[in-house]
Image (cartoon, rainbow, N blue to C red):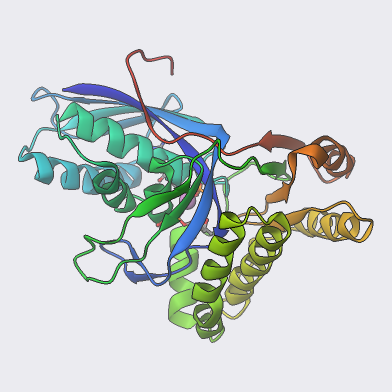
Length: 329
Ligand code: ADP
Ligand code: DP6
Ligand code: CO
């Protein structure tokens, strides 16, 4: 009735941006990401008849009632699969900033889905685990697997075919992802609220939908051909299109800060000077810079020299979920 799991975060090269069914976390478009070696979550789940409700201790602090509602809704899916009503005590440590655009919801719910299903002795396959993790946070569906991962949006409205699969494992292609920290505090608009507001109110959202599946197709070709230039160009353009949709929302919003623009402009400048790098940005002000491993030290130095940059963390493709026997959190 107890299990521990680790899951890594991921950075989307083709963004998940919008749900067609919010309750089941069914996306409007398929997406593609790289699981990152450096950032991860470790979660322990204990089920016991002694507990009168679910609880969550995250990074040493008891979660708020609002957080507990989310955790309970998610654990209810796991309990339904196992045919039990027993409550759980969840203890989790994020080795990644929480709610700051570093995808803590991805590693957080992938680790929770993995540990909770193991604790209840559900013997789930990778795709079943991915579909389960999806119902905690959409991006968590991709963190079940390592390397390059695609989340298929699925066709049916029950959500049984909306899960991720691995395209390449983490050793197959070494791309560098420099995580440029400009602000590690929580964002003011969560990914969930931001995408919902955009879907409901932005006239630019149709423009997003018009090209995202083509971007995905080209990205898969780039990965298949190990074509870094194509990967970078498509990832950067796709990220800019996603962020453009937020400007048309009502009320409008923008995840960028001036420091975000400093990094974006620096990347474009480096490219003009012949140093190949591309940026992508999730729902937050921090930037991920894509480059080839032979250039990572040089590009890291150039980015770290910007006065608005607090830190540059070098990441590479990382592993999928792991079951742990000891709790180090
Ligand atoms: P992020 O960019 O970090 O993914 P989101 O707004 O998507 O930001 O999600 C942040 C939310 O994810 C948190 O407010 C919390 O509800 C949830 N979360 C983050 N880490 C964990 C964790 N380890 N266990 C459970 N839930 C988590
Ligand atoms: C911009 O998975 O955090 O990072 O499903 O509502 O929990 P919920 O949202 P979340 O959204 C991630 C949005 C994104 C793009 C991406 O990771 O694909
Ligand atoms: Co998230």
